Image 1: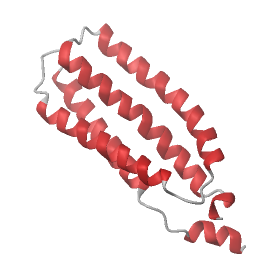
Image 2 (image 1 turned 60 degrees about the horizontal axis):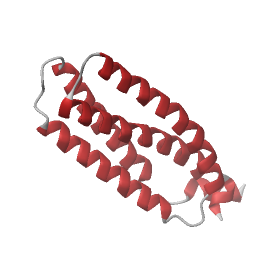
Image 3 (image 1 turned 90 degrees about the vertical axis):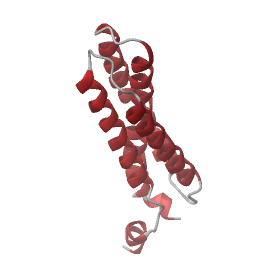
Image 4 (image 1 turned 180 degrees about the vertical axis):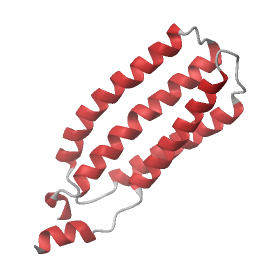
Length: 138
């Protein structure tokens, strides 16, 4: 009982919160771009959202890498399969944009947004599972 209580009471950095915020920024940028297609949209706001989301993802992953002890085997097992699924999803979405004749800088920004999206969701899922693993409590 005390072992599971220590897993629940453990203080961790706001990794999930940072990743969810990054995911929200990616979704907002994607919706903004998709709403303006097929006309060329203004890329400035989306580029800001993309950079902010990518920075949040990197910060979350750096904070995650500094957690000791942590159930890394569980994290990587879950992350591997979730990443596979989300790479397929991001690939299909990228194909849709290419098939719809999205070109140039708009396509680059959309693809980069999908890349960040494809890392955010598996990291959220894997972190959420691994943080409650009893081995991670130490």
